[in-house]
Image (cartoon, rainbow, N blue to C red):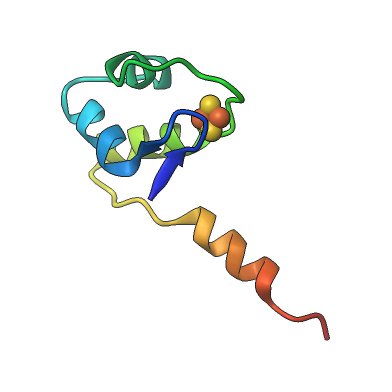
Length: 74
Ligand code: FES
């Protein structure tokens, strides 16, 4: 799954950066050789960083949002 569309960063790449010691989104961008562009991925990265800290698996909030949008109006 892409976490950062602007930089084409996947969850695998972000998780690898987190496991290598990144503690802030700016560290993740730097570890991946990128820079933030629009910033829309920062919230997801923060969630992933928090989950790594607590050992709680991350859910796919993007998919949930898409499902909610895809529901037909009644
Ligand atoms: S989606 Fe990551 S900077 Fe735009």
